[in-house]
Picture 1 (cartoon, rainbow, N blue to C red):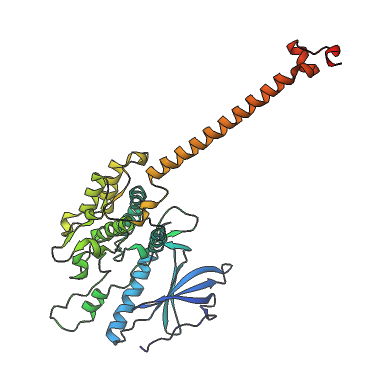
Picture 2: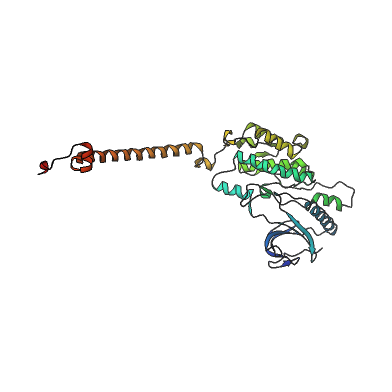
Length: 366
């Protein structure tokens, strides 16, 4: 297989998808923004399988797995997963089309908040988990493991309050390595996932389980809370998390995160449904998050001057109340002065003097 050059903007694919621009490129291929001319130019994502490793056996097996997993994704139908629209070949290129999601990734949303000296609140992260866990439960029921959950791969579409899980790793490089090996010798582990987010069995051994996704989901939740890369609060020598040195959350929620982050897979929750039940038991759908203690950061943070902090809100309310009191007092004083003036002049005002029976006689005026 020869290395395939980038598809140029304006190119028409499959007589319907007009390439607008390239969205990104990785070791296994490229992604393009395209307009579907058979659906009123609706925007889609076109993914091209174009591995940089051109060894023939590797390419053939990776292509086989690409097509196999594409068929699996074709069975998925969930509102929080981009719709799978098709897989086909054209001019020697293997292509896949998915729904285009217009919105921000949570990495972008976190960056926006950090520019204001903020991160995500505990209440927001709890709801975020409760929104995503059913999605993981759904894909796991179809024997699909995402393997790459991080703030970059969760999006919030414009006009929606539900996060979407994106960018499924279609090809498992470890499986390809094993399939293409002509030797009976054990293969060296191949990293699958994202360092800092994926558990050790996935990074060091190339193994992954359903609760490997739960581990990565918990790490992502902590990144949203703390606003730092996970390696900042993980000790690589002791293989322990020290996230509590950076943020304080409710005890029950902290225990749930700890169990999701257990180093040994058997010590974690085994399914997404178990985590959802644990969260829902502590925080049911009708739970009032107002009773939660606000998230406390244990290190200096620029947001200490933020207007949303309770103390400053109280100060503002006191200022507003004082201002209102002054205005009311001024109005009362003005009314009092006008009343005195009217009373003083009342003998000379016909209507008023008749009411008060103190009219000045005409002779008094002569």
